[in-house]
Image 1 (cartoon, one colour):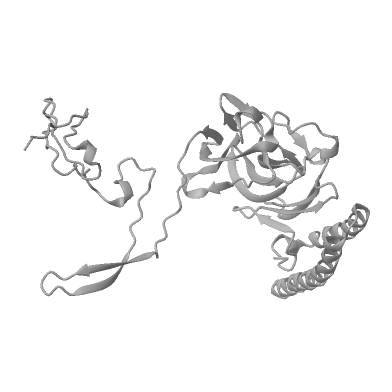
Image 2 (spheres, one colour):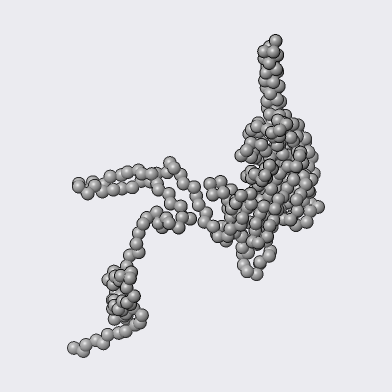
Amino acid sequence: MKSIFLFVFIGFSSVVFADEDTTLVRLETKLVTLLDNLRAAQSDNDKETANTAFKETMGLALKQNAAFTYPFSKLKSVGFIDSPDKLLRIVNWNVEQADNTHKYFCFLLRFDERKKEVILSELIDNSSFMPAPQKEDILEADQWYGALYYKIIPIEKGSKTLYTILGWDGATSASNFKLIDVLYFTGTQAKLGSPIFKMNGSTDKRVFFEHSEKATMSLRYEESYNRIIFDHLSPESPGLEGFYSFYVPDLSLDALILEGNKWIFKEDVIGINPADPNEKVTVYAMDEKDGHIEKKEIKNKWVDPSDDKAPAGGIDHKAALPEGELETSSKSTKKPKEKKIKDKRDPGAMGATYGGMKKKKRKKN
């Protein structure tokens, strides 16, 4: 009798999830239409009306248990960001306004391992009533500054998981923000901010970078180096210092290095592209016996430029001396004598020596 009951229960569960998948397919199809309407809307009022319909349907879809892993691949301008530990999903989108500012919307799906259930919550964009970017405060879900998130980095701190999140905010017509924050949960309540950023002697709960709207700032996580690497920003000219809408990348890089459960700021780091194990290069070698040129493909040897012991350019070489230069012993302290050289390019420099210019007297015939 027990085995019959188990069979019936498993069969019932399969039917439930199959029904949820069918429901999600139907809801996704509806969401595609609503999203198209939202993106096609012209006025702010029309956008608000279209977004309200889209958000309500999205909320209904996310209440389905299967929504935690459902791909929603047809919703091209909505972000579905999953944490590496598979316990958090961020659903995020923006609506651009006529004045080039943005309104942001965000649902959070968190899997409660103890209760074995998915908890749905929401972040409420309250940026219109908030002062300049807050670095010191822990924010509640209804005090959100608004952003689009694109990366989640879990950090364990005791029994709690802190999710470091990277994001973007279109801000104004003159400047944009890149930001790093911390998302965590107390019971079912989402909170933002944690004092884990060590920045130039201070400890911050989140990090904001404001830069010119006409520039693009890189902010990315490099898992293999346990760091968040980003462009260093500088004003376009010294007189514009402090006016962040004129700040642009200056071709140098900084980073936050993860040490334990803290992010430690480090200035002037080297950006490194990861090695491609399948990359090959073509070389031509001459057979010394018959002089035949042979074409070969060999595996490219990648050299880490941050490795002080690595030879420059991957080739171990010694500096070549100028032709005719006296070779001296590395142990010798005697200064080599100056040697006269001829410069064929400048007839007037005949007789020039290192360290000075001298002219030889011409012999009279």
